[in-house]
Length: 450
Image (cartoon, rainbow, N blue to C red; front, side, top):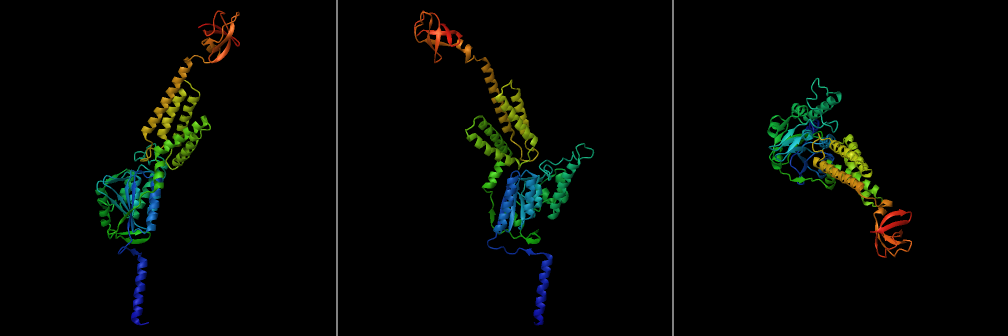
């Protein structure tokens, strides 16, 4: 080997070693089939949103997307779903650009954590983020407020301190991972701090402010991000954008995990099974009720359910049914309605944004229960005033018609209430006379002219 060839080989080996030691830098001119994936996360963050984001990120990776834009407008949501989304972002092989848009949107509570987890954080003008206090990372319950955590407050305990410290540590670690303002991240948890887009840019909470998606891709052109152990230089301004819309499964899961829908499914299931029990063999209420109950229970195990509220709801339904089967003065039914309303309000954690039952629905069902109760009480009162429809007392009020004239002893036959009876009365009554029952001796009725 000639000396100059040996020198060239040595230089190439040294360059390769230097590159592997410093980390790969990818970028350059994009391939002709490259594109940017666009995922839109709107509304409360729950199981459906987490599944949608995770599936879309995996699909974008399989399709060969150069980057993913995660556009957000959310009030927050469940901590478990937020954790799943953050894990999916951190495991993504392509850069994820968090973008709070359009103007007027927000990334509150859980949305702030997700924005901090993205490799690049951006906001549109007239948007805001923060108020990360309400949702605890350790569960679906709200984090303690700063007042509750103050020294000397009787409500302060080890569990609340652990929850808030865990939340602070989590969002600080995300801020440090992507080189953003970790101090303000802690304030957003401890003090529910919020920032507008311009304030967030000044405090280095976000990386840039862009008016729309096109401006966003232009703004990130040439930026370097660290993804999966590699440094990636972004060249996205000339790439097309491909939208990843939710599929039918995501829409269905989003529908049944909506607290109001889950609440109505649960009630439909209970009342369907009750109707089938009262009218065996009808089948339709029982089948529909079983399906609704199973779907409702599936939704409940995904939502932040208060089981004391669920128990009160079941107690209320039981008391209303007891009133219907064993009518009283209304105390049992009224107690059932009260228990049902209290349980319905307590059923879901109202402090989790977007996860509470519509109060109008609860009020409508409660008023319906009160109306049914009033109808039952009125029917009970009416039956106590109605005359008897069988027995001797009923026969004394009956009238009829003689089928034939009475014999000399005053005996004969008459049609009374559609039945033929042997009767005894005044012998002068001819056939066809209208008669009235005045007494009964066994199967013999004593009659007089009506």
